[in-house]
Each structure stands twice: as structure tokens, then as C-alpha cells.
Image (cartoon, rainbow, N blue to C red; front, top):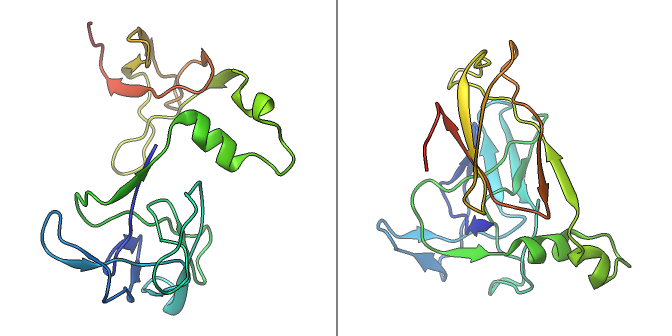
Length: 183
């Protein structure tokens, strides 16, 4: 999992980060942007309220010069909107935190969970709903799932755009492609 550092100007739906650290910037790639931290102000055009960045998902320990944790892609905007809008960077920013699946599991585990409990591979049973850009279900659509071991699974969505269930042992990164792919 890769989480990109958020900056002033990044958006979560109609919400925009309006604060950033003038002393911490990123210019890779240009333009230069001010990096944001949790709690920084946002403005949401949808509900017309000032809000703030709240944490969601794993993050490494450490704080910015202002003493707050870094804001990362996947964090949410707290305003008047429900569900809370999710932030994504405005470009191809290369300032990021990356995590292995084991680190994500350990960082997200409930307090008191042992390392053995976190790292023991479990069976994952997932099903996906495929939607087009207008959030309309892709009914009766051919798809291919590429698993991290290199195997490919082909299928066709049902009338609601839902795939068959796909099982893996342990957390894995997968890719879903429209149409059938060959190795």
C-alpha cells in the first residue's frame, strides 16, 4: 500500500485543503506545494462548511514540525457531509509512505493483538462490484483478475455488475481488468 502525502489544494470530492506548512514543501513533480498535516483546515463547497483533515488508515510514527501527524491519501474530511469525503492528491506527487501487507495488518490490528495473530495468513474471500465512470453497474461484463502470484482468473459480472467470489491465502494485491487478458 502506498499513501501519498497530502498538500494544500488537494481535494476530497467538493472539499479542498486550504492550509499547508510553508516550511515543508514538495516540488517533485512541479509545481511546489505546501504539505499538510492532520487537523489542518479545509473548505467543503458541497455543505459550505469549514472542516478539517482526520486520519483514516495506517501511518508510520512521526510528526511534522507543527507536532501533528502527516496527512495522507485516504484520510477524510470532517465537515457536514456523510459519508466523509476521502482525500486524494491532486497530481503524481512522489512524496509517500509505503507499507507491506504485513505492516498494514500490524498497524491496523486492535490493541493487544499478538504479532503471530497478525502475521498468520488467513483466507480472504472477496467479491467486487464493477461500475463505470457514472457509477452505473457494468452488468454482464467480461473481466480478468490478476493475482500477485501472476495467475489470472476470468469471469463475467452478474446483472448487478458483481463478480464471483475470489479467495486468496493471506492479503494480496490484485488488479481487475475489463475484458479477458492473457498471460
